[in-house]
Length: 169
Image (cartoon, rainbow, N blue to C red; front, side, top):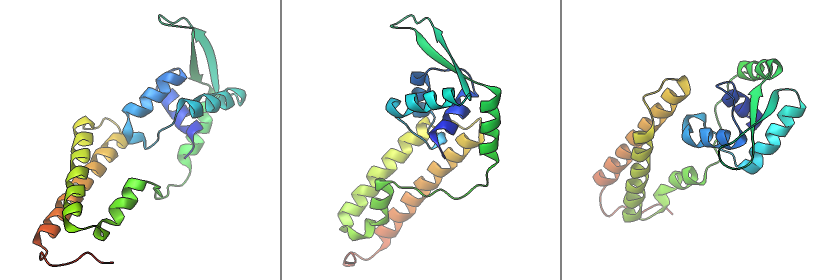
């Protein structure tokens, strides 16, 4: 996935400034993408140079004029072509997931505490996740529900294991 395609997808939902796009990404975790403004603005400039978006300055009630971006027909074609590419399983590079992968390397009490901590995070994300009006949002909610079920299973296994079992080295 590339940031320019994510931006085209967000802009296909309606015109927006770079700031708006950043906030749309933050609010919609189902996108599976996050970017900083220092990444968004250069990507928008490249899309503009490529003819995939247009930009219009609009008055702003606060501060300087806003730069509002819209998808062009070429941008819509590029976005559709990107959507048509074959799907592959994602390869996450996430330190939190890696720490969970090595959970057994921690003492029992710490494992339990980490699972409780992670379940709180999952529960908070589930509370925010809407039931889903899009496939991406339904997928995100299903993933969170699966994470919650995994945590509950791991905690049950940990509680059922004999006390004297040391963590593998």
